[in-house]
Length: 288
Image 1 (cartoon, one colour):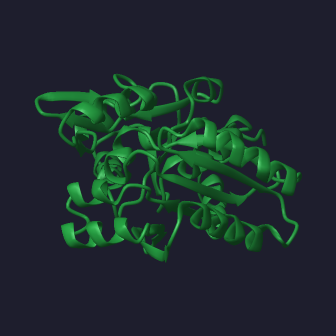
Image 2: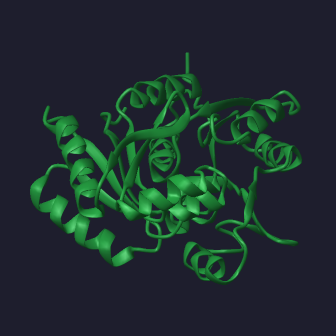
């Protein structure tokens, strides 16, 4: 009996912040979230880059963000059904956005293709790692259910920690009281945040930016000490030069880890603010 080759499409949303050339190389389809300045709506990654966003936000009111409309999912899934047998749709954590639920709802509205929504329970380029790994396996004709199982396996090893530089940004967004922001700024507190049970929560309060970044490095070092193959990303909010310096330091310390540089784009940057830095990582699984 001849083995059938399964064609699986990979979809993610814009908050994975996968560079366009990588998306195109691995044929990853993107659904954009929106950032809204007053009456102006921008699809992030399509209409506004991360650098343009940080320019805009300096002179305008703090924007709001919104998830993609259901119709956008349905349209893409229907288009993919003409060429593919299945879709794996990988999205930012369902605890901070309804985007994943949008994919779930849309999956019931499309015929002729099986849709597998995947809640990354994280965001930014760590979410992007899932999409890239899935695309590599899909390119080899691996069954969608096998890919989903491997993504769940990767999830056990995924971590991300973020340092918020400007507490007033969190306060403006309603995530911190004015008093907390004022006192925190006086004390130079840099909250270290992470994902827990699908939402972003404080991990530790650290007194200075330098100490916060050192703490992230220590947490990373603990995880990769087992000698397994890892991929890691340094994530910045308009601090590209600092991210490069940090990567160079880490490459020298961990030559066996594959490092890249990512960014907090418009949607995530709205909630964290300029100057934030983070790092995320996960194991690399053997190629099937």
